[in-house]
Image (cartoon, rainbow, N blue to C red):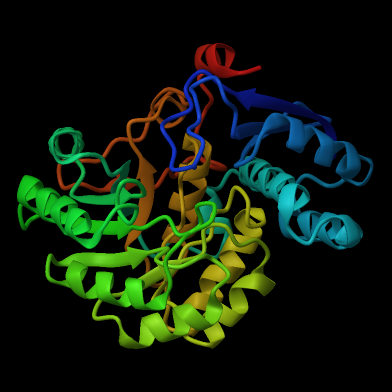
Length: 371
């Protein structure tokens, strides 16, 4: 069974509010669907966290090696692509495109074997996991309403991120966190993402430590991206002295870039995004490396229903895993597949147990948002 074709579909018209300095509009594209076809008609689907133009350029480079490859050896095929284009890759758009291809290969592998991806990764340690609703900060009034709507959707854990938190003063930061805690009460877990990967992040270690102490007073589960993503030494110090868990990792690619954060105990929680770090194959390697260093793996999931499905399988196949990220509300999660993911009455998502990723694209939604 060989790879015979590839389809690349950009998504626009449903891009959600982001945390970037120049705000994205709904027509902007930052997510791309990759579909691989085999010579006997099977289709595997993957998702890439970058624009269609960049994916198309990378696939033009990668396709001569991908065409005709086996459809049932995802780890070998994606590693061959990575190694073959080492001088043009080592992260960035080439690695992002390999990520989507790898996810699609795992979907194909599962369909060929008639098994869910989690089982092919080694076995299922769990069949459900808690999603945290991922939303952005806002002014106190709108923030309270956002939180109430998120709880009404069934989430029992919520992460708040980016502006205006960390962009004004300490009093504003505490007001926002207090507003959030008062709005949801003690029974809902809250996480805070400062958004330190934003352009020209102005804060350093001392701001991060002072803020971490404030957050601990409100029972915040973890403090994410308090520093720029490459500030390894800063994260080492912050993790050592902060009174709550420290998290980062969403912008890193390739397992080699995650290793120092784990070996040097720079974080309590590592957050690879399988739609750009190298796919399911690479995220699985990173997750097991994290487990061996007693660091919790929590996948970054500011992407699509395809990425969320991949994260569910990854967390199912690890001995210790507690959360997946669930961007909400988002058309690319809520509309893109025929049976959308929804938290159950206890606030959990169930891992799909049908072959491959266990999802089917909603073709009407693909036509509506795709280009």
